[in-house]
Length: 90
Image (cartoon, rainbow, N blue to C red; front, side):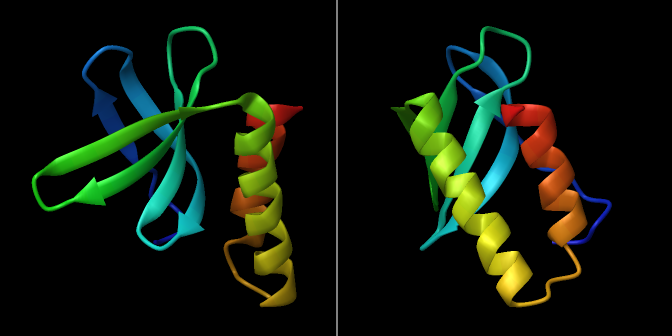
C-alpha cells in the first residue's frame, strides 16, 4: 500500500469505515468514520467482506502489533501507521 493511499469500506449498517491497521492473513482492522467509535475485524472475500465487531482494546492491540512489526522491519510506512494510531487511539 502506498503512503498516500487510504482504504475505506462501506458497512451495510454502520456506513463508511476506514482502515486502522492490517492484521495479516487477509484481515484488517477498520473503524467507523462517522458514527460512535466501533471497530471491526474485516476479512475480504471474493464476494464481499465479512465484518466481525471487536472491542476497542482488541483493535488497539492489533494496531500496536502492526507498529512493532513496522519498526522491526524498518518499514517506510511506520510514520503513517504511527500517526493513524495516535489519531485513532490517543
